[in-house]
Length: 211
Image (cartoon, rainbow, N blue to C red; front, top):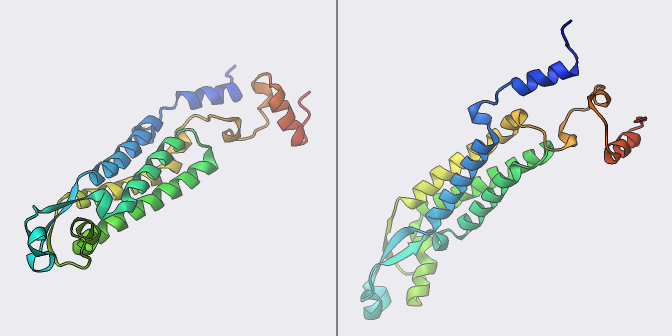
């Protein structure tokens, strides 16, 4: 006779290989790498500012070109990258509903990263005003601003980060359940083996008699 019961079903499920794109380690690592890539861009020079000597005077004109890091040009990008990193790591141990929430958080953080970096690209002089004022003590200065490639890299990494986050709910269907709440309730639970005291209390709360 062929065993077509719950044990056979479990064996068939266990023997099914997880697709490469849906592997938990691969997806979590990808999200972590992208979040760290965004964070890394903020430690680099986003803009090089050449001050206008007519506005800043001889002292300002004597200064070398002012380099503005991403953390100063777009202050929110650093924080949002860390939020996305924490969300990616949390997705590895979260439950089904929590994964949807984490996905939304990472997507929103990614959108914030892209928006902040795109704002710098759209108006680099405005983004550099804080650093110019800090260096010269003069606000509203005119300057020649040269933008590096790092804001563009932040935009690209932010978009990829959002796409990777959207894969989480679909990839999680192939992940092994970490808690009993992730396992669908079926009539074959009682036949799968002995239950502990916590399981017994949970079943009693649902109106089932574990005895």
